[in-house]
Length: 361
Image (cartoon, rainbow, N blue to C red; front, side, top):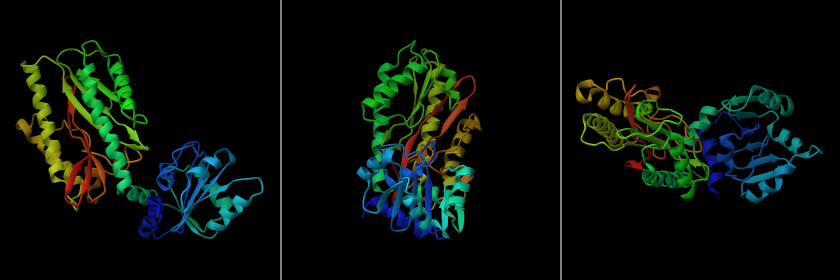
């Protein structure tokens, strides 16, 4: 059976409240549409995907019908919306009087009302949390896509160092990184590439600007690639020139502390351990190191889930104390230290949780 068809059975084995799922695209595509179809070509705007335990129906328009037929697989039927109302009649037949789940985090209220009025389900249930839970456990194909994307990004991080020259701007280096990444096979960045020089590195989500690189600056690059729509997210920090100075020593001490926190968290990852406890291992190390000089300087969670979206669900964070690590999760390990007016260091890898512990992809 197609691996995507297997997702239908796996989802319904855990979600007992509903008879079917409606994934309804708007002017943009619900990420769960790709998760349940794997269709890469075309936008499928305002299309409806009806997913049941053993079968799915894609209701589409003439504009994209042939594209859908070309990409379909056993377990999914493509139905064309036409003027005769046949498709709407079939959709109504499958939904009327049934409990249907929708992604309430994506679908606007007016779309939900349209489903209720037109197709008359017994009830509509927001299953967005169940969808997130399902996507957190990656299958072999998903893991391989993320692995390839991470490989591209790590290679780009190595190659970009040839462009570290005094006077280059953050924006120029970001464009160069994206060019290198595409040449290595990326479909595009998984988010806008972050490049920070000097004190800008103290801003975790700084947008690259015309700040020029100077000797002694920290260079922080946070970037990702996409392979078959699956994302990577890798951060590297560098110290540009001027070694053997007091300023360099302070920055190297920050770097070493972050790297230690990164490695301690990685070593601690095990099935059954709470995601929040992994965060605390890294945070406590940073807060206590060097007599507490970095206490409170780690200002975000240790990591987030990764997949079709770059933030694909819960991660290593105090907010997820009740969620346990499970094999198949892919979560970033990205501790950092940020000192206003001085700079910041962040080191990030994409980590697969396995039965044996953790693996950097």
